Length: 83
Image (tube, rainbow, N blue to C red; front, side):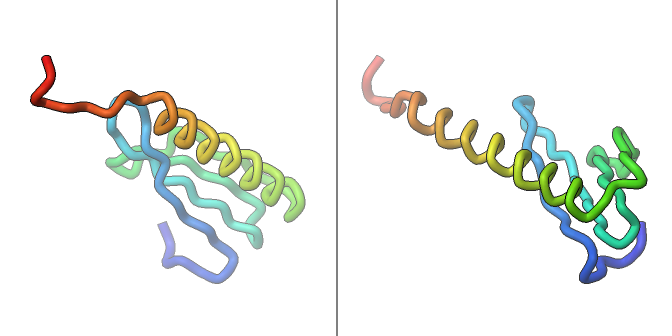
């Protein structure tokens, strides 16, 4: 993978099993790539327009942050002193 440029956005996507996926979107190349923790490409979308990438990013971030908020909201507080 090349060095990060101003056309790239990189973020980590934590999975339910605790593993992390790395997501790289590149506006100039028109690509979105998802890699596992060893760097293996799991998904790569090519020939995307700037607008398509922006919509995918916004949708992804909306879903991920909504899921995180719902998880936090519905997760009971753990008290190790109560059994």
